[in-house]
Structures are given as C-alpha cells and as structure tokens.
Image (cartoon, rainbow, N blue to C red; front, side, top):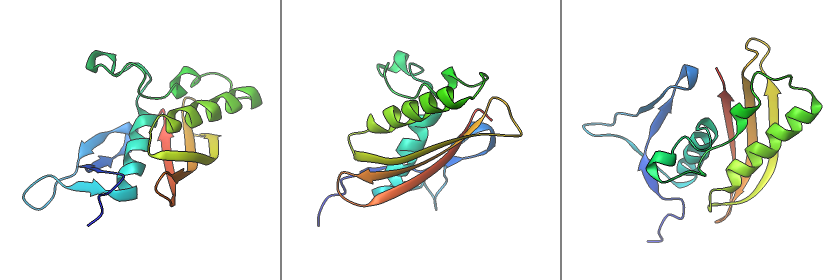
Length: 135
C-alpha cells in the first residue's frame, strides 16, 4: 500500500466568522487525508495571519491578506492580495504550482474578501479552494 503524500490530520469544520472547530467522528475525532487534507491545510494557512504562530515556533506561517483589508481594494491592492495568496499557498511543500488566484471584495463587508484558487499538487491532481477572509 502506497503512503499518502498529503498526510492525515484531524478534520476541521470551517464556520461563519472564520470559526474553526474539530469535527467529531463516531466515538472519536474525525480525520482527513489525501487532497482533502491539503485543501484543509491551505485554507487554514490563508486564515492565519503571518506571524500569528510565532509563539509556537512558526513565525513565517500564514498569509498577509489582512494587511490590506480595510484599505481601498483598487487594482494595485487586489494584485498585491493575489500575490499574498499565491505566496501563502506556495509555502506548503505539497503544492507544485498555483494555477489561478481570484480575490473578490465582498460587497456586504468592507473588510472582507472572497478568495478562490486552483492549485496543482506535487503528486498530481488539481484542487480548488474557496475561503472568505475578514468576515
């Protein structure tokens, strides 16, 4: 049996307002493996502010997306946000290439954006992820 290049982790449930909880399983906590684990890891990386985990010896983990939330999201800032997303996604060694990134300002919340990305994984396969940041 070949090992899973994407690993296994505890499954997280992403809720409104960037709330994250552990997913209960039948009698234990649920787990996630394969590409689904990579999607979960990348989503979490985008939700965590870069430097937020410095106290846990991970000072470069996370994204800089919130650095621009609340500012005018003109063409230049949207391009910078796309770069921040791409940079955060490429931190994960399981990502071979970021194929597409879309950042869309939320009309209902000035300090929020919707992020959609398409990624090629190192062991093959493509995945899509979507997350709202700044809710």
